[in-house]
Length: 356
Image 1 (cartoon, helix red, strand yellow):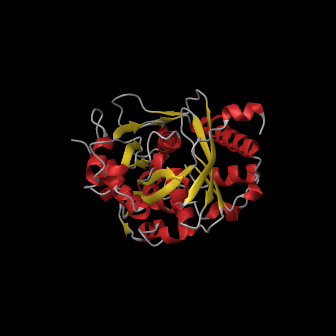
Image 2 (cartoon, one colour; image 1 turned 90 degrees about the vertical axis):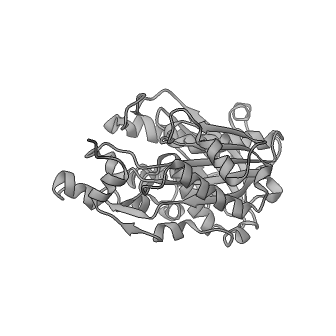
Image 3 (cartoon, helix red, strand yellow; image 1 turned 45 degrees about the vertical axis):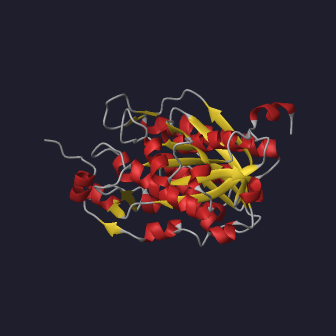
């Protein structure tokens, strides 16, 4: 490793990893053809098959609690030992009141814990994971909980409405000798690239159309992935799986090909065609599906993207413990298969699209 990369790659002094993980995806599904039927008379193309939609009694808090409970079931630890509960999201239920405190209370992690909400568009979840790596890796905490979770957002008729889904994942970070996947190293790449935004008090986000591709998504993801692999001395062939942020189906497929990964390495974590882009949970929920299929000694490259803009890349090495964890909580595929199809009118009611 060169002196330059010793300064940029992030590796905790104490070896740490993922002690537990869990996903949550709501059961309701809106087919993309329904959006096309309403806004384009059925003539428009559909970038995904369908997306997950939160029910009337679901929001980022309730879904985060479910994912966190699944992570705890796999971690097999006392929740009172968790010293940080961090929730990354674009759709926190309150402007002023943390999501994280409610989640921490519900899982039994209070009062001796740090709680905070994170924002960085679609990489708010991996931002929380990065902080948890530092918190546990420094020895300040034995365990920290990081969550990426979102509900469907998108202006009626906007292209985002086809893909903006609901769901996410939770991860408990802790000592490497208790982990199902050890963190080998991470790297973050950040610039001021305003490709996607939502100003205060605006209900729906805005996006820079094609600007979101080349200077935003592709530049940041390829830069972070390449820098991390260069620093670790790894190459695409060294990884069993790769997971990218998934705003649609084509972007992760294209960036995988550009970086030299095969479709087989990408397939297990590519969930966007069936649940949509779950924003802050996109890369993290893809990783849960990969961990559900992973075997000891597999290596995984996780690369998130957040508009505004930045990318977090992490290299993981799977341990023997992953096998017992498979059986301790519902698999991500279980949530995907548990589906109830809805029409556009029901979706509009669930998501508060109708105003008086």
